Amino acid sequence: KQEVTQIPAALSVPEGENLVLNCSFTDSAIYNLQWFRQDPGKGLTSLLLIQSSQREQTSGRLNASLDKSSGRSTLYIAASQPGDSATYLCAFLAGGTSYGKLTFGQGTILTVHP
Amino acid sequence: DGGITQSPKYLFRKEGQNVTLSCEQNLNHDAMYWYRQDPGQGLRLIYYSQIVNDFQKGDIAEGYSVSREKKESFPLTVTSAQKNPTAFYLCASTLGRGAEAFFGQGTRLTVV
Image (cartoon, rainbow over all chains, first blue to last red; front, side, top):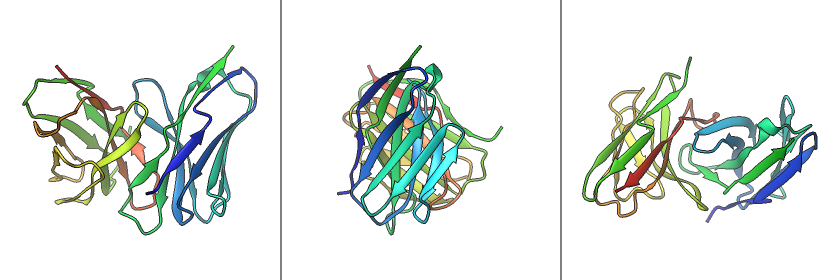
């Protein structure tokens, strides 16, 4: 069974800190990995998509890396702001599996306090 | 603006009743998906559709049904056979396999 584990489950940091969210997955033959943000009671917002051939992707203050051999991805958030407070989810698409079926982790709840 | 629209935002179902959740996209994406989100369990795939008039069961399809008569629309019916339907339902779409997934704002279904 394919699984995704996100550590830590919750994180509280003061504004301005750089932080790292971790995602580990059991299937090394992934097709791609995607990071999402979810605000309370809302849908998912795509942050970054990393294809299996890539090592990292960057968007503004966000940087995501992918290490297929170790089954890990990290999301780095620089200079965190209160507006970054949300749940962050990672999900991977396994190679050779059903079309577009993403396997999700349970998320990391991030709180950035002023 | 392109995106995915889910309606209604909140839905209440009586015991034994069927209800239909709407999902419409104007992104011209071929594939559409329905996920269910429960606290502490992450998102689980209910059904997906790669193309009009075709759809496949996901991991938890029992008690649900879908149709894909138009590219833009992928409604989900929660039938009375679904014993624990209270959850947050999310619709998503992708341009193709391996493409970035986009999600709607969700429908919260509660059994009363």
